[in-house]
Amino acid sequence: MLQQMCEHIHNYFIQSRNQGKFEIAEGMISLPLLDGQRFLIEGSALNDGLYTYHDTGIKNDDDTEEVGLQAETWTGTICALAVPPAVIALAGEINLWVAKFGEQVDSPYTSESVLGVYSYNKSSGGTGAGGAVSWKDVFKDQLNRWRKVAFL
Image (cartoon, rainbow, N blue to C red):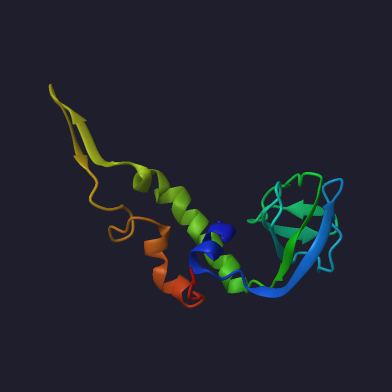
């Protein structure tokens, strides 16, 4: 969720941008990062995305499971990130909201009944939090604090 959130607000909280030739071997990459620091891989054919660096292994963007980085040598960019704890906490809140209301929001129906004749009602918005359509709408005010202007 953290990567989706950062994409949505156009802000990865980049601390430094390192361009050059990089190699991933045995699921690890040699980087000058702190244990627990997040980083973004760009320009890779196999491993683009947001990860958390640990001395014991690399984890996915929400820090919940091991990610097997694929062996690769490429020329691109690796950005060291400084994601504020409040943003990470907000990503957790969004995950909880999506777990609770995601299925309802994704459904095209608000109700369905079978009483001799099949009928349904189309959704005119989401459910759960004031009729908002998605987590982006529900958490808009909190996300705007960190939003950056996107240039196309």
